[in-house]
Image 1 (cartoon, rainbow, N blue to C red):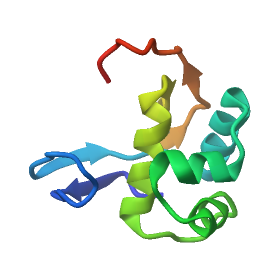
Image 2: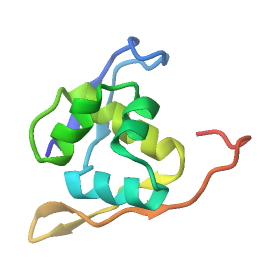
Image 3: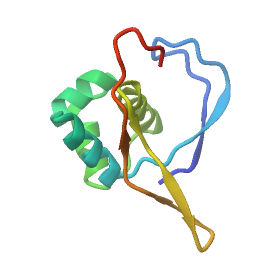
Image 4: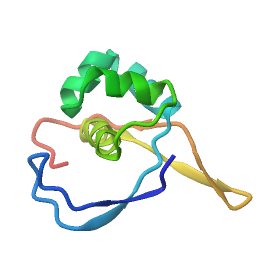
Length: 108
């Protein structure tokens, strides 16, 4: 699991400049988030604009292209999923997921 990644892509329809963001979405958190939302892998793939195989591969604990992971996380965060973490003995560990539904008019 990568903890930091550089995102300077304009390729995914956003106007993101160079920045570093914290990444701590584990395969377990991804599955848990989908379960909360009652989303299939296909629904997450469609929401994140990633191939279905990328969702399956990530949830199976295999490496995917870093931007696929970012886009999946962005899609989940966009509907109110949060990915908390904890630090235990100096190690960053995923700590489940949170969910706070967002209304249509709410800014992400």
